[in-house]
Image: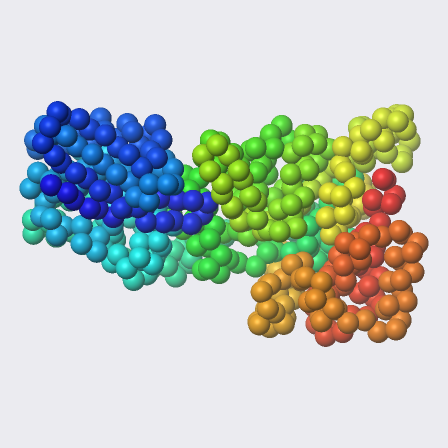
Length: 506
């Protein structure tokens, strides 16, 4: 008796269909799983055997062979428990043979027949829809996540008995969700606001430019100047997620097993702030089967690296390729995966070990300062579009009038983003920071005065080609914030001012 059941697995953030073939034959009793299963998949034998028996059904005493096709891709995780059990129940006549027709099954089994949630359900359901499978049976705890996909019926399964009863006429009701209601109910309610930060108007302006054009930013200043306070308020001025961005982030969090049990759709931009003791693998992702790291969990959001110079040099250097490409390629023993990592990098650091470089308080020797600053390499600095100095706040600023609110700043950011959306409607990019060289030539046209000013800055500051393009991108964003179509001298001047710290300190 041969039964074929549709299931799925995940490579990177993309799901793919796996056909679970279950054969029951005469011969010495055995239970073999083939098709490159890992240890967790091989352990399905005992979970499935015990779950079927404890549910009250007879486990077949036959030679059982389970094949996971395609057989040339390694399979991992417990998600094949339920489809293997379905194949065995079909083989023993408990379920009709037509049961798996146009159906998809995934789920882990406990020893008493309860169906437990698994990771990566959203990309698997997307793959099932693409494969023409319209009925999907998933663990009840994953049903809300799976129901984010339109065009398929999502049936929540709590136990094996519920699945059997469904195919015997006691039909389950498919789960339906209102996505717009989820966005409304989980709209960002920030407890912090830019009005909390007194003083620092120049840094706030730089953060506004960063948010408007999605430019990476470095803040350098003494302890207590407000660098961390400013960075944590960055999400309050960034545009809200659209549905496409939300689904892409949710796929990553689904694979990582980090979805909120109350709301299985990520509706707010991620803000990840790993500690400076984080290893390079925790940043990029790792494990025998590669899983998403911090830079992927920050996709479409903010990655904040506080105390930049305290991170391992190797951990910082691995950021260079994702900052350029917006993806991270991971090659591990369990396979090769590509995860999206188009994050906005915010970093902060002190100018010297004590933090008071250039003042009477500093007691650091010059060689100590040089060694400290050299922990951040030139190529990484070159990839930080905006470099901003954060000065200590004086008493008058602390006791002054309330500062501008996040809502007021966000309005300007949204208008700038609207201009970019219209500009790039037919292009492959969405924001100024992601413009390629041809797009820079197309949308960052300079007049004679602007070209002369930029040439002088290029020669005097010994800028790289990358820094030259960064200045043009930032100028384009500043012009968008001003509501102007053409880049003028004032825009170029402000953009150049954001590229001077590496010359001052490094």
